[in-house]
Length: 509
Ligand code: SF4
Image 1 (cartoon, helix red, strand yellow):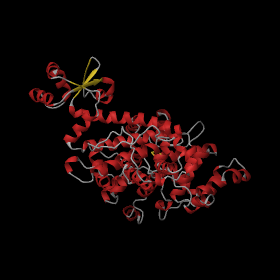
Image 2: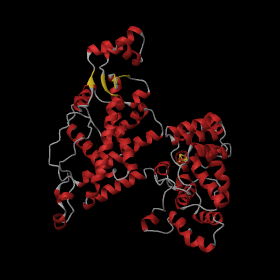
Image 3: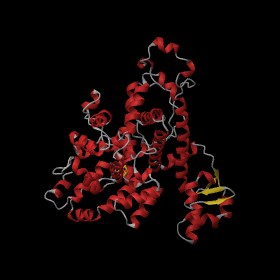
Image 4: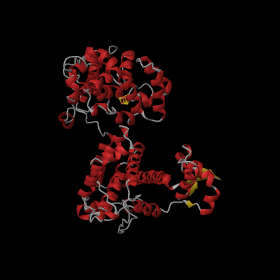
């Protein structure tokens, strides 16, 4: 796959590699043909590309930004139509994929880049179950988006090329089951409904392959077979794609140790996956500086009650209760406090006062260094030059280092059970039954951001109404919150409405 002249493995060392450990050892070069725009990525690429192409194509697909922006759309709960409109210019720029009917001269090059970049990222994101799940979800979103915007003829040709294990329903059988099929068609009544059945191309598959369609009663089931009309076949193709990719990622994960031998690719793949783990962690604390806000060790108690998201309120309450927090809790909270504009000196004072059960000596030996390190006051050059670590985004808090026994970090909407989450919300003043019920449903659907935004909107309902009436909120400020520090900033500005200059401050951000 990689051109030999870019191979940085010393010839001597290359010779002693166990031939069984060479990556893609059983692959032989095969000319790739791309008859359709869409690709299910069943065939590994085998042609040569340069290391530069290897890296750049992967970056374009991931942070071009294609996958990263798709993820942002899903966090912001954009509808499929809004997502398609938002993604169109980015896809055209970084990962264009024209149809055959466009007669573009770039078809082969575009499809090659799409094919290779998918496989490179597959390698980069197969190392952990979390990364695999996330990559598969985003690639599936991309596939669904492309499928829905595909040329009809090409799309049919693509689906046929997959040789999916579907059995077509014959004319006779369709006529025999006309009434049952019409009942699931959902359009019109009587004759119109029957027409709709006749116009569809029906196929039947084992019922357990289409659980979503069964659950939403969109298909008729008989003798273990689900009868699926053509309009619902998109979701079947997408689900085939997704399960195929999940299996492929598992296989890639097993083959990964072989790549450790390759000192050309490992650093690139490592870099790509690290960036993916913390997609939006680069939240400079200057972004959050609020003019006029009094942010010091003494004001944290009242700021926590009025403006902190539930994850940080939970950490603050645990800290006050135990006069202690474990490592990840301290790290998550310190970075958040740094992000709201608490200076290093005030942060050290805050932690010193909070850990009142330990001696000065213990505090200095065990805790002081970590706070300074988070601020970039000590540590390696990169850390210091970069001003330390960035505050954690919701994505990072939700997906990395789930809290164990005795730990209080993480996101309560995800990591608490429903009873404990409800109790915590009530303890911080969210007692409205409709809101609590909504949070419960969001949690069941794993829409943790939605739950958090629901609580935010409830806690700031009067201020939001006023801000809308006065037209002082920008469109960006009405978008879903996906960062704890954004929660704080928006809360602080909303609650400050009416104070001199607060409205100006809102519109200027
Ligand atoms: Fe905190 Fe984000 Fe969870 Fe809200 S969704 S509680 S801001 S981690």
